[in-house]
Length: 251
Image (cartoon, rainbow, N blue to C red; front, side, top):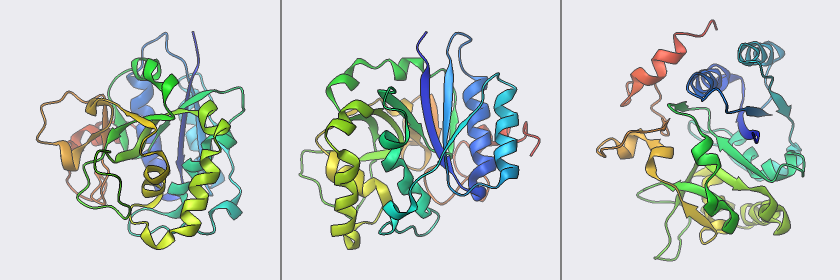
């Protein structure tokens, strides 16, 4: 069976939360599904890398740590609860071996409730650059043409082959350099600015954003705590889903 290439990223502040997400990912996968985990290194300590390796070894797999060229991100600014490392996902097509034609990007502040093979096998991806879930933000730093929706970058099914052929990462960095003052929601604004008409919409169940979707009658497969109120610093909706896996960790 095809290997599912999953990419995530974190720094030391988010290492334990990434571990919590990965535990939920592997505990809820089907036996026949094989995940290969790639972690973009936001200056992780050796101790945290070892802890992440040890966790994944219990599921008979090992993470591959990826390093970015820091010079590419000199114009990228973090603020609030999001650091500059969030922009690193822009480089995913260049960080992975060119033999890898697609990847599933997952944020660290997620809880995975089901196997992800159904998402991975979505046939629409062949016609687009990525699949994502709408982010019903009230306002963003960029303005899209009226008929287009704005997507959340916390879960992205990425067509790496199309990205590379069309130099999408380079175009996103160019946008950041030229329009830095317009960017409000970090890399997400830049991604939407370039890909607003090149993505397809995934069902809300694949990125259930608790702050904005709590009123919807949905059985989420991926729960996303995507505001500054996290399960570890507040009491967001579905906090107990995070706590269940966090309490299982020896961290």
